Image (cartoon, rainbow, N blue to C red; front, side, top):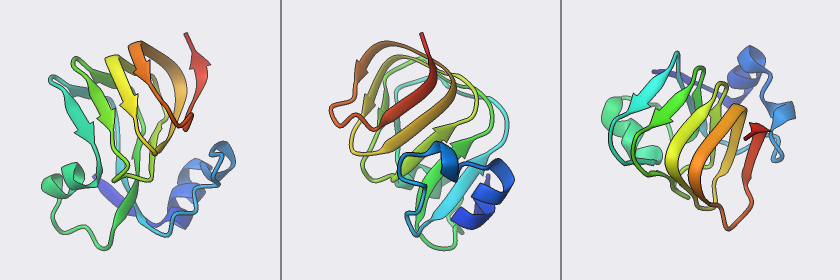
Length: 126
């Protein structure tokens, strides 16, 4: 996991133009390189990532995965996270998004979707 500022995240990935919000949350960003598989239900929120790296400087508001994300169980995106970005594909049997901006640049494949706030953008939705 790498920690970047929002400006550095945009410089490396050109992400601000792809986000409806512009990605200006005033928080740090965690970047995970490569594909990720979660073999159980997962709640993607800021506290999950602090468990992985307790030395994170400042609040993490944005999480970016450079590869594909596959969840074998229910994936819940909590409002404790400002923005979740997946540059590859996102797959899960169930996805719940609550007050979090989410961008999937690849294919979104979910069996059941709960996005009451309409903050999810998938560039290739199947």
